[in-house]
Image (spheres, rainbow, N blue to C red):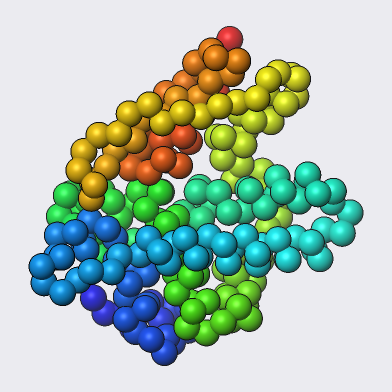
Amino acid sequence: MNLTGLEQRIGISFENKKLFQQAFTHTSYAHERKHSGVYSDNERLEFLGDAVLELAVSEYLFYRYPEMSEGELTRTRARVVCEPSLASFAKELEFGRYVRLGKGEEMTGGRSRPSLLADAFEAFIGALFLDQGLEVVKHFLHVVVFSKLSDDWLASMTDAKSQLQERVQQERMGPLEYRIVDTQGPAHDRQFIAEVYLENRRLGQGAGRSKKEAEQQAATEALKHWRKG
């Protein structure tokens, strides 16, 4: 996989090319090639990138919106780092072209799947942090993310879980509970089934390649029934 084109596109040259490549290696690819020397997928980098994003976005919002309360800052940050928004950033940068996928994931449209793109974005941020530090990460985010944070953009990127949570809070109802009720398929091609409950009443069910994606789908179904009601 040649990542030179992506480096030119984003204006960043990685010192550690293997780290850069790891950020774009999906678990399905690593699993299929575990006997040919490919062991490292991007899941650990995704974990790190998630934490780095939380910090960088929190700092930006803290100084950008001095009038916001803690709760407002938390909700705004959630909208910036939610799966739909991260996937949109990755799509704009054409990350899907560069991800190394297993055959099954490739055949089922993995390159355009929001959860996969969002994970790749987080993994990239983790790799960039290790390779060049927090300041370079923040500069990258200023160009790719922070420059787009208008009120209209934030509203458009409110994910289904946040919409459902806000609806429940507005109507002063009890807490939502998400449950993973089933897991199907082998480890490298896992399918999760999630359900969302309000006071032990099931509102919706959803499926996805990650727990987050399944929960989002469950919230989406719940919102559809809520609006009809």
